[in-house]
Length: 363
Image (tube, rainbow, N blue to C red; front, top):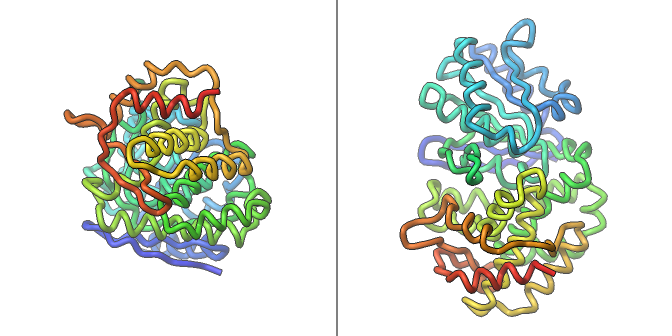
């Protein structure tokens, strides 16, 4: 079964397709591009190429396959300005034109980096996203946010650049490591808290199927997450208002990542901890019932995600939060939860309340 969602952006629509037939559609679209005389330039990493190189073969332009493929080292450390410069140089030497297509074939690091390269090379070339991790399928490949990291913080240099095509194939998830797979579940729980509560019920009742990576269950969950995000992005494409709700748990999560190191704490794990800290803040600031956090702790634990992080030093984390890309002269616009499915954004929170949030995830 294949599903399709269209995100109508201000510059162009983003067509998102998923399900078992998604890869066949991708190969068909690549053939159409070549027939039109255009080229595709695939950015991936070593791990994805080893597992799924055959699936990306129809996308690689050039008789030798070298011209149209750039393979990066895996890991968040590769999402840097230096890596972007390598890709810009590669595209320029290959003579890439504005109507050619950069294809991000990989997880969130590849998608963010390749998307940033596409947004900036020649002031913008076409972009396709082929996300291969759960995290990138439910979140980072959709909505047009692309970026690279700086030593002082995550995603501090970026742009908005909608992919014209996103292809989500559930089979990619079968080769993820246990930690990588559970990392994506952190974002899924975020969407369950933001939406109307039905997805949260699904996560609680179908935990066994989720942990077994049942393709039908996962395809349905991914579709629900994507549909929610697409609706939010259509309303606020450039993150000036309601799109901020998608940062639930991320102000804490990004600060934990940058403070502890990107190699120490996977993004989804950081988000799961950040969600719990944000819920603790919400209890103080907007009166979220305390049983919500207890429910989420149980769910995260059942999904194999962390709920506590020992040995945290609060001050460096608070300093990192102050450098968050969402910070303004007025402070950080924090995302709280009034109740499940009722987020509130732009909430001003003092440092003492933020410390209480961190205490909630510290044994």
